[in-house]
Image (tube, rainbow, N blue to C red; front, side, top):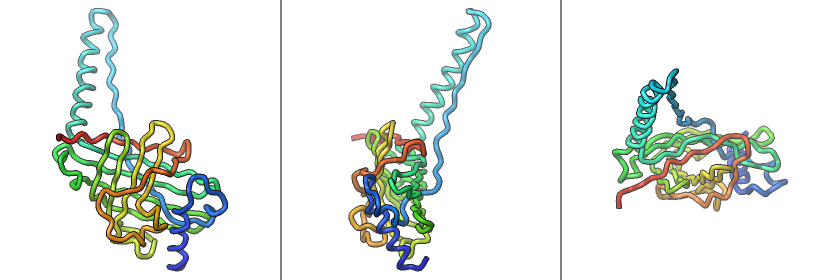
Length: 219
């Protein structure tokens, strides 16, 4: 795909909303590749008699509680997960996130670390991009993450800052991106950190999930 075609494909793709039909087939690049999810650990205690039951189960409960509280201390905010977006024309659009703000950096969301990726392919055409996180703000189950593109096959994308908003609804999650009004991240100029659009896109059911850890700054 030449430079002009690839840029046009991405721009067209990102202007197609979840309810669009015919135009989505000509879309190009926008969504991710992979992201890590936070594994959960469960500990159980089994006892053969009533007298030993409480003794056996107590350490397990304490261990789980300690582990959970330890995790909360280590992380002030997070956005993780991987999922595809819905397109009536069947475009393959994927976003993934692995963004974290350590507990020691609770007062400074600009110290968030991690990466996020997205890709968009339709009819064999499309593109992908990967960005390094430079800001993460979460509130309740909504997250806004921004980052600078470090790798991409979309001409002109490297070095551009992009912002993405995620709403972890607990059901069909939603997503929005900073280039919604321009149609192309390459055309978005001087974007501040932690700026995204309203989460107008919908995740395709059964393709994944996003998880938001809420930020609780001290005011």
